[in-house]
Length: 511
Image 1 (cartoon, rainbow, N blue to C red):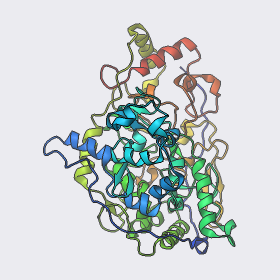
Image 2 (cartoon, rainbow, N blue to C red):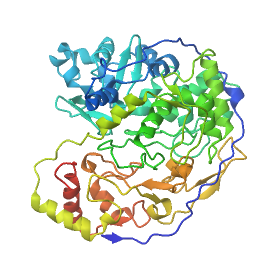
Image 3 (spheres, rainbow, N blue to C red):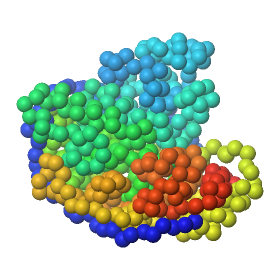
Image 4 (tube, one colour):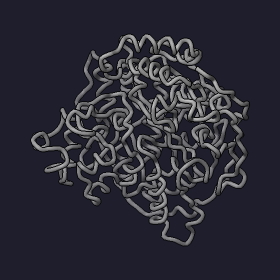
């Protein structure tokens, strides 16, 4: 493997100081109501088998976040008003579980008959046939499986048996959220400050317009800019959607998340439930502390703007909307950032036990000679300097200056925050994911975690930003000396052999 020269760069992120602004422009309308079930699993958890219990949590548990997705964001209303059909769900990459399909769907070819009926969408959700969406009375909630599970396509594209752990690389997460009648309630995850990628929600420029409609349109434009298979999971007001990762073999492969922000899997799970799947947590005292009092403060502008937005949608809103236990005020520990809330720990631990067992489907018939040749390439090229020949990872976070040759960030002042600044390399946008939130919050490096390679042959495109379409492209010097992850094989035969070796990393036979 030829390692192209890597140039030293600046990898230090300055503390951003935001000012309170734009809150007056967020007097938006709306109303909602309270209610919902505390438990969303299919039935009660088994008394003994924690793995089966965890599977049910992963697939069906919302922790009552349907109160956010339906009452606040208005997803169920949006489905009804837009007359979203099963074909519409499939068109945005939402997957259908063939084992749960009602009989009339089984008798019909995919794409016709009941697939064209908007009324059938609700029936599918109520039957648990829509992977990642669950029905609770007249509401719709979201589970982990929406992004981290997909169908095996045995019936048609997007229709088949569930394959848990695989990232749904077809899913247009932004389009799904934009279907909500009040998608503006997802504001913290969008490009508010003019940094990062994608359209900006330019709040100051909207003065004098009907603010509810103006902000809603701007939010929808930003959401529709998220590529398939990507979502922004950091509520920092910076536009930084990243690839949905695989969740195979989640045991002893920490730290977790692209940037290694969380040392423990349970903390990562809790973050996604209590923040990503219910951002109203950010408008609680614990959430405000997370945004304002951490070692790298994000600024009061996001706190104030989002609180005003939710207040306008529903002044009586209980926050957070999901069912979670308060765990005391914000206390930043080096081990993990805390939101002040935690979902049921037994459920979370059971899901961790399940995901520790989840592996990708076995590979196609193996050419043993090519796999052996690829193993030799892997070793001789020095790939195992970072990537272990095992189901585990070394737990390293590689600094940006090592991953991106010529990394040369500049200090910028995000729009609307004249006293705040970020360190950004706008040439590539490769650092958008870690401009604000990173492992530096717990004393770690600012960079990207070395991922495990289990199932890598099924998880294209590659790198956190999805910028590389195939393994061959990732390993080819044609990408250029200044591209991210600058480790290449010039011989196309060696690239093919290494790809064959990596394709059989299913956590069973190989490595």
